[in-house]
Length: 263
Length: 367
Image 1: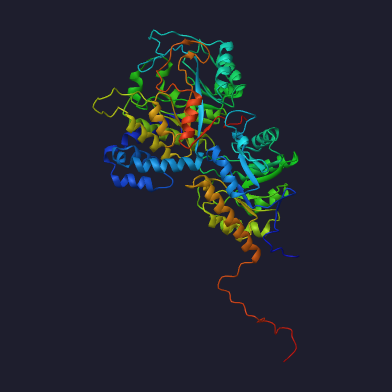
Image 2: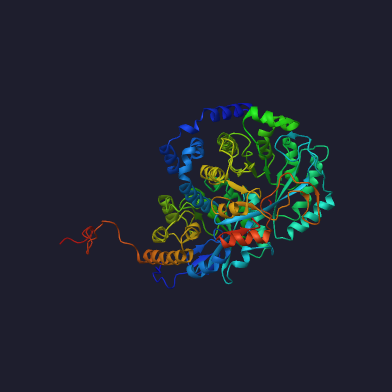
């Protein structure tokens, strides 16, 4: 297989579509007038929004504030069961948000942990209705395999609890997904600093999704820009093939004598 | 645990907590902890914690941002009837008070809903006095069915019901319930609720549990600040919410902080809740359960609300009429209490924006 190590020609393929940016930005945690600036600074191709915040018309409608040309990734936040996620996904479609959907099924308002079991059931229901399903999940390899088998277009493991800004605390578990899962792995939730997003890309995650880290920064547009740079750096480093820690490699093979002719 | 057992355990825990004995060091320990305990709530409500208000405010703001973003959901109450069979010492609806009593017809409810929806609001709180004869469950269910066609979110602040009745109202379209215990002190509770079904402490205490069992998504808790020793009542209220959250981990818990305002220039007693104490209560509840909603009503002044909205509040009422009717034309019945913030939805939205926060009208999908 040819290895593509040109960061300028390295699209993210998701649900049959190509995206240049590997940074996905959230939209719901800062004032709407700030959103345009944040999106211009971060240059994401995909922007998430909570369907519960969207309405057909209505005052302060979040949909009217997302710049044109971005792919919308509505999420099912508020859903506690697979059936509820389906209802919310259908509503997203009615509102004109397209077929991409981030499945969020959360039965734990305290830590906002996703319910993997209901998420799997929701993935099956949504895929059957033609949605491009991107399930937010607890990074469990076995569950990730089941989700992909059910038709998920990507898996979105959490780096840390939503909004915590704690970073890639699930590093070891995400690494297993990166190694084993054929679908894109998008680290979602918990990333607090650009360096952490960079690390996720560097280790082979296909993209990251960031919301609170930008929204809670002193200067959200500047932080969105910093994340965009970090994501590009991380991906470029991944493509470049990071060197191994402390493992010196000889310039000529050390074991080359095996099986060779006597000399 | 049985309801009676829970009440007993809660009252014992509150009685055993010595607010005066809390040291600054104990307050600092509570502030340093990531996942706080009910004992931490006690520490944060203590007189010693008053010296840490600024730190508490900064932490409350950060915690709220994490869970809710810089968003404030706007809602308004709709009083559909003020008939009441209770004799509560503190309440304008007291059976013995001579006020204009009224009940909106379903047509009038529809007209009120239309007028409220025209302001942009999508979140409504239906209220009524306790009068099963004048405002029975069937009437309330009909009102909910009307409101659900106008609003994304319908909450109820009505008298306690049986589980089956809550299920009926949830089926009709209501998702959230607010029931305030007023005071958790059983002797004081009995004293101020002189007569009527509200005298039954346990029936009120168990309302959230029954509503959540019936399928409601969320339940709001509160005590009427200024009625009894407020530190004890707020600690008890926090413990109550904590216990219900343990039983229903998926429930969306909320707090409200209604206040009987003390007369100015009085000497401070353990009952009086001035703005400083009110803010300490709000911050303590926020830090105790950072994922819980926190509402601030128009009982409070515009000045206080405008400052507090960035310190942990998640819901503000706007465009409020506390009488029965009044959103279109004249009020049909007298109010339960007098509001201090009469600003319109547009005015309050503007203040929220000016403070760098986002007014949110639509934040719920009925599933």
